[in-house]
Length: 493
Ligand code: G6P
Image 1 (cartoon, protein in one colour):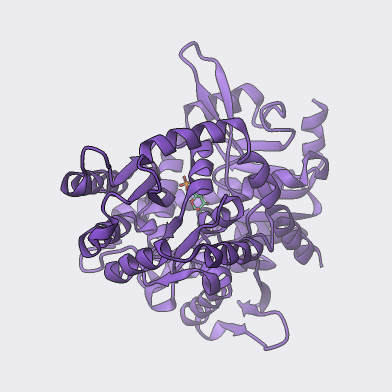
Image 2 (tube, helix red, strand yellow):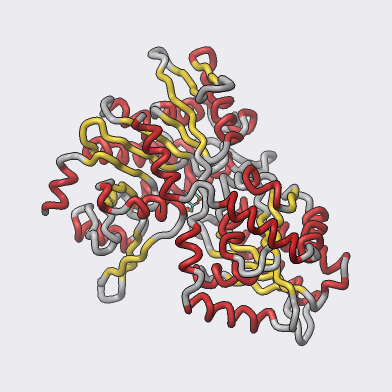
C-alpha cells in the first residue's frame, strides 16, 4: 500500500517500454512465475537500483502478464522485479497485437531496417489503417499512464519505435515533465522512410519531436532522423547540426526545439565477466566442446534472435562458401549458430526460422562426415550457453543487414578466453566503435564474408589477442548504467 501511494504521489523518473523487465508465465494450476528479462535496457535500469525510485511502465504481453496485472492492480510485486517498481498496463490483447505485430514489428521495424521487398510490399490500405488506429490507442494508453504517474517536473524516458507517439501526447497532457525518447534501432534514410503514408510519417516524427531530447545509438541514425524531419515536415522544420554544439531539430508553429543526442550503449563488463565464470557456463562449455569434437578444431560462433535483419541465412551461405572454396577447412572448423526464436506470431519470421533450419541441414548433408558436423544449430534460448560459446569462439560472425547497435559484437571480446576474431557488418551500429579492429564485411556479399571468415580463422594468435583487448575496451566505454545516467543528466541539464 505504501509502495502504491508513493507512485500515486508522483515518480521523479519514469521509463516506458513495450517489453518490461519481467514477464510472467501462467502455470496449469493458475500459479504465476516471474522471469527476469534480459537486454541492455533492463541491466541499465537495474544498475541504478530501486533506491533511485524510478517507475518502469510497460505492457502486459501475454496471459501470464495479464493475470499478474489483475492480481497486483497494475503495480507489480517488487519481490518479482528485483525491487524495481514496475507498472504493467493491461492494454486489450487485440489492440496490443495490432499495434505491436501489425505496426511496430511489421511496418516500423521493416522501414528502419530496410527489409521490404518493395515491388510487392508494403501495401498501405484499410487493414493498415485499422492497425494504425490501434497503434495510436496503445501509445495513448502509455501516455495516459505516464501522465498519471509522473510527479511535477518528472523525467520520462520513452523507449523505441513502439512508443513513437508517446512524447507528443504526453507533452500535451503534462507540459511540466521533461521527456526523452530513445531509438534502439537504426533510423531509415529519408528516401526509404518516405515509403510510409505521408500523414503517418508526420505523426511519427512529430511524436518524437514532442520530446525535449531524441536519442540514438549512433550519429548515423541521428542524422537520418533529422533528415527525415526536414524532408517530411517541410518548411515548418529545421535541423541544426552546428560543428561545435549539440544538434537539434526545431519544428511546428511554436518552434519547439528537440535536442538530438547520441548515446552508444556498451557492454556491461563487470556483469559479463562474473556471470560467464559461473559453473553453469563451464558445464555448457564442456557440452559444446563435445559437439565440436576433433582436437584443434576451430569454432565460428553467432548468437542472434532469429531475426530477418540479423542476416543468418547469408551467414550460413558464407560458411558453405568457405567449405566449398577452401577444402582445407573441412573437418577443421565448426559453425556454432545460435538462433533463438523471435516474433513467431509473424509468418515471415516463422518462414525465416524454417529457412535457417533447412539450410543448416543442407550444409550438414553436403559436407558432414561420420566424425564432423559442420553446422551446429541451437534454437533454444539459453544465456549460459551463449556465454559459453562466447568464451570458446575463435571467430564471431556478426553480419546484420542493419542493426541499431548489436551487443553480441560488444559482449564476445569482453568474455572471450583466448581472443576472438570479429567479422562485423559495416551496417551494425557497433561498427562505428569496433570497425578498426574487426574484419569488416558488406552483409550482402557472401563471397566477401567467406573470405573474411578465412582471414579471421587464420589470424595469428598474438594479433587476435591484441585486437580482442582493444575491442573489449571500445565495447565497454559506456556501460548500461552510465548510458542510462548520461541520458538522465542530459535531460535534466
Ligand atoms: C529490438 C528492439 C527492442 C526489443 C528487441 C526484442 O532490439 O529495439 O526494443 O526489445 O528488439 O524484440 P521483441 O519484439 O522481442 O520485444
